[in-house]
Length: 426
Image (cartoon, rainbow, N blue to C red; front, side):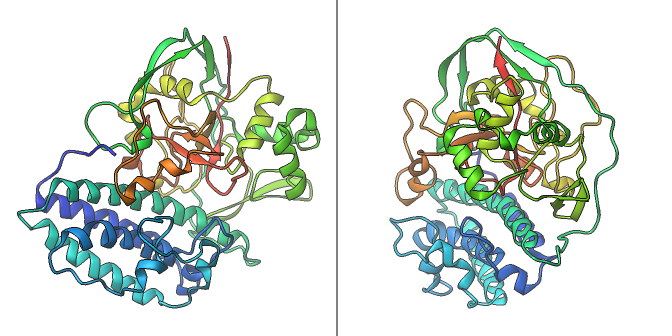
């Protein structure tokens, strides 16, 4: 990981508390029962997210760096360990929803205990650079889990026959459709990966050169309306459009539409964090797997971009990405239709709204070196059998995203806010 500049203790503590409070705020609309349930093995209870992010600071920052720190509860070391084998035992991931104890109120007290100890640590004069870097990693880690809280709650509520809403206010308004354009690139030698100051995960490093053939990339992401045309043209019934593994998965799972879509009386609706809603044809499609994205691209006579193509195309407005996109701070919690077309040659909605699948395997960059110690398990050991997504989503904290940020999921995953943008050879 690369470190961000280290602020003064008061500013560091303020940022720490702000990010920690944001996690607690995401849980505020939920009951204790909501926070305890796990809807599938890939998701986790909100209570577990709140505890695990706290566990991270306790395990990697406080225990080794805070003099005289006493763990809140020794049993939590195994209960809330996710996948850090070097740390020790772990509670099985599919059984996180069985942890009726500790209660939510105990987890909130755990968070207060750790936050108080972190505040004291920030005031220590011998607060080491290593500890400061681990704090930054912990904050970035917590922001990742803030997105997971929302995606996991959405899946949980979708399985409830009452179809409850996380928030009642519906953010969408009717917007005129914007016609996508193709943006050309001459290709050639390009550089991708993180460079310069500021935080980056180790999987964004090192910056390196790639060769790109001439290509074109769509100015706009694929919309719900675009994908509806794919469905109407038999896209889920045409094996020639699908990768073999994708077709097998779609048949086994009975896929006929993106996750959360329901057809009633000939009309499609989708389940959202605001409850059930009609399909808005102008909003970016979301909750599609890599397999569905790849099949759609083939149906459209195009392909998915490589992550290098995506990053090169997105560089033109990378400095504004945290301010202009539809991120979690907007409160929409759903992709929004584009109000104004971007300048010529610039991608629309590249940041926020939906994560965009690429055709790139999640693999190490040339010269990649994982961090030392247990935190080295953060990214590197997952570089197999997954695909890269770029750009962030409507559930991502805006300050968390970068144009070099590499998200990754298995090709069948659909519960994240995942969509796509087309590309083609020039």
